Image (cartoon, rainbow, N blue to C red; front, side, top):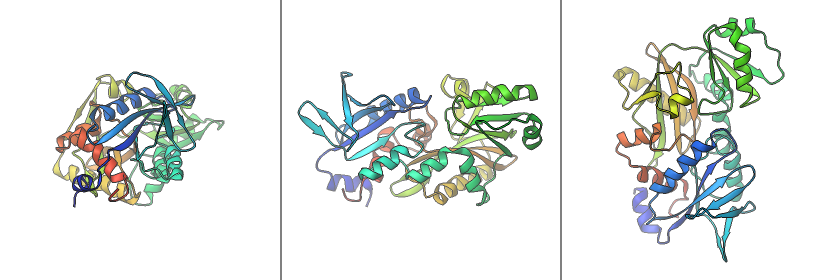
Length: 339
């Protein structure tokens, strides 16, 4: 029995869906775009969709006219005039904190409110690049040689270079969209790259440069099963896949990737294994670098971009899944069975 049949049989009343977007990090503008795409494509014949902006200074429902109504954080309800709106499910479109690091997931679980994200632990783990790679290393998942720094640590350029060599990448440990990332070629560039990363996070990951082909693999739960989407190969005009390459047209994202069948099978199976080992739910998009034909994991995103130009929606399209079907499935997977 498919979720669509269940929906038709059991959902007489339309469900109220809160689409949360915004967030507390530098990624908030991208999140707003993702959330608005979800709002645009979610089937209004089946769902009542509400855009909820989550910012440090306010949580508000924004109606079609742009008027704001405060969210009651005690139960995540909204009062509009004399009506109190409660939600059946939350669609999470927040990139970065607090939607991708486990905080919103824990909040919704305390309220008993279904949401489209993975569980709080998995969200917090995957958001922390250092912890994720360390956990997966025990399962034989390969990653680049690395060096860790926390704010206040002394910086010894020679020790760092001895560990990771040059060139290397300096990254904010808990940030997305390539905020706080620098590629370093010279010893003299390390301190400024570290300072840039500290603008985004007080933890830093410094990684060896892996010279190879970069691919992105979307893995989702679809119709109750783990599904690997068509793989995307990423090439960029820039020095690496930075913010400009991701969002300002300075890259090519080729789906399906023009890689060998051996490489496709290997990285697809690896991405699926990671998803299942971590007991993931909902959307995920993992980034890999091929060194020869061997995939090395860079990171996993659990609230990937959902704009029309984003990688995961394009992968879904190539797989024959429309945006409406992709978003509806996420909700149906989150709702209690037969609700």
